[in-house]
Image 1 (cartoon, rainbow, N blue to C red):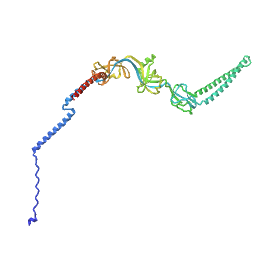
Image 2: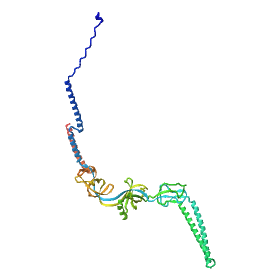
Image 3: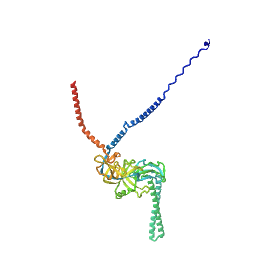
Image 4: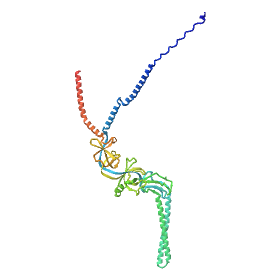
Length: 449
């Protein structure tokens, strides 16, 4: 009864078994092993990039081999281009900068007042001296001329009458029939009329000149510019722009400057009467425009720049020179006979001065100091240090030194072309032999079949 009222309690679960605890000596053995593995991994990681960068496991040996290869490459013959030293004429030229300046630049103005009724030129036209350019209304001056001619005719008639009276009075005076005072008065009247006639004649000439000025003509030959005034305008002598500007183009001059140091070399042949040639080039100094002669030298040196002005004249028949054009000039002062000449690219500059690389017969080079003379563009004259017939390096000298070996591609090309000239016969012979071998082999195969 009591057991039914109080049932027995449920059994409690058993507590989990405690985890196994590793003994301490085993943990102490694992730690050094891990440290050792890390050290080995670090050594491998450090050693692998070294092998990769050096290209192998023996990097110092490879480095020594690379140095030997560089030294062998440095001792290899360097390809260069050479030129032969020649002997010939070398012009002594003074290069300068100049400006094209016309010999005449005239602003055509009217010399009297009036209405411009006609313009007889076209802008840009070439005109000659005396050609009619424009016409001013001449009618006012024609009327004035006729008036002056009438006054002249009147005074001439009075003068003729006075002279006749004077002759009569002189006859009467010789007969002692008239007073001498009356004769003298008549003579004075004749002088007055003579003066009036001269004055009238001057007026007539003035109005004739005005009629001439009414026709505006070209004072010089040249090229007319843009028209400054149109027909129908009233022009006066005070107009500053004038009617048109005429610029002389043929001949034309170039004014250029040169250093005072060149003055002695220029004046000597100039005073001797030698016509020194001057060539004008374009702005790029590559295309010759016109050839002329030195005309004169200025009378003083510019102290601020140490230069002197010169003028050269050119025929300019093809009108290649234009006023105010910038040009380069080359003044031929002298010509050196039998000069030693090399290409300008062969001459190098160093601490000891100018030098060249001379090619020896064994295809090595040697450094030789030279003394240069006048330079004419791509040619340089040598005063001392070289002889005609020697060969000098003109390209590839930046890789050379004393005693360096060289190779000349041009000579290789010639040798190759010579070998190729003989190669067709050799090739044909080889082809024939090969054909014979192949033919025999094919015959042997057919027999076996």
